[in-house]
Length: 170
Image (cartoon, rainbow, N blue to C red; front, top):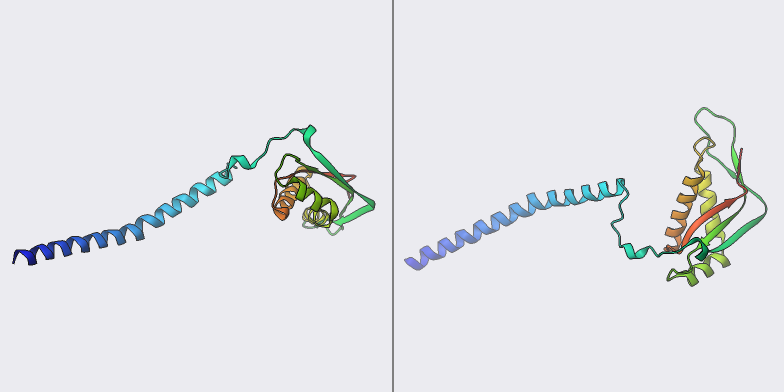
């Protein structure tokens, strides 16, 4: 008789453990996930780097290797129209200069890839310029956005700066 009672007590304790585990999984875990997502959003809003800090390599301006891209004639890029403005606006670009960090691990591959075929860089820069209107255009924002897209395209931090030469907006 004592063995049956002991078995029932053990079964009840196991059943309680199972019930509490289920409650923990379905009530506490979603709250923890939401908290983690909230922290990620707050960190991105205040622009904190959560990624590995070793990814950024130190360099100076003197270290940079530049590659100029010069067009034979100015490239015309259509700008977006402002609300209520029926006039077509455009930008003309005579070239650009891409700056590379030679201390980056993938410098040789990326430099060779970009210098032999500049069409991807040119397309990204032109598309980025074309997303702005005459009133919303900002040189710094365009350069930062184009640089970010180029780095994503080539999956590298070797390309560190873009300079636009002869840019005229009208």
